[in-house]
Picture (tube, protein in one colour):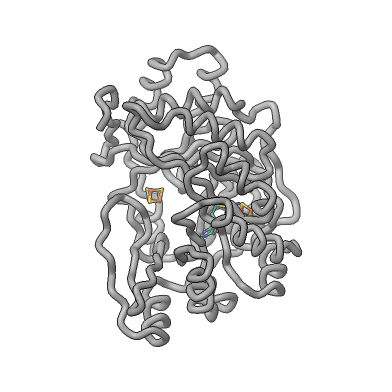
Length: 349
Ligand code: SAM
Ligand code: SF4
Ligand code: SF4
């Protein structure tokens, strides 16, 4: 641990370690589990944090113990200043900084043209959301005809020199639960590691219902039937995925946020593109960091806002949802329309 970092600890003893920065709320897809509505209210463009403001925020978060930064959206590749944002965050790595990992989560549509530029700017790793290998399913799910662009994007990643690539695949009963092994086999050739994600009832998932959740146990049962024995890999950090090894050595992960949440070890912070700091994916409200940033707060002032906020954190959103006896949609559409900050595409996943 570098000497100037004093890790921030929350009210449940969880150390701040991971920052998810949404850099844009808009998206070029309309995935049914995330953006199923016809119309959305976007954040005012003037409110989006500038590259310099993002840099100052990252500096403050790193001083409080953040070692991993992940850029997300909306779709982060549609933010024109993405290479500048990556360079700025990358410049905070090295030396005595505790920041060691800079990654992005993208739907892959625009990746083929940009992978090399993002690599040159200092991006470390890429996670690509890939739920299906079938173009007609992709179109039904995302309401866009971009499947071939996504596959092209995937092919460009290792050519651009990226390693440790991940696929994030939301598994939905009745939609793609029959593609688990196909996704694993496809990933072998990329190469990439698949992480199957249980369908979550986050804000924005207005078509969610428990019967559509294909659970971790069901995923494992299907894969055992196909591959035989599956060995769990012991966890080394606070990453959300449980990882497993197939008999041929191939690894994959499962993020069981819905049926087996991992709130007790959650070290994640989220900031929306307009600078609202959220302690949990399920937080109803957050802290506006854009105001102090634009009022000229010093690094020390920003750090003390973050340290005080994190010390109050007692969120266990997914565990609270699991404890409910009857589980309907988390945030109704009318409420989402009044406050886009409640939307998954604003929070970034
Ligand atoms: N647009 C980018 C993408 O799709 O990769 C980044 C933002 S997206 C909100 C981040 C992740 O959230 C994606 O991997 C997506 O599959 C996941 N996600 C969105 N809605 C979800 C839901 N209801 N349940 C589980 N995962 C969800
Ligand atoms: Fe799909 Fe990501 Fe866009 Fe949501 S933000 S609609 S998950 S591509
Ligand atoms: Fe962390 Fe909240 Fe997700 Fe639990 S629900 S793992 S506390 S972000």
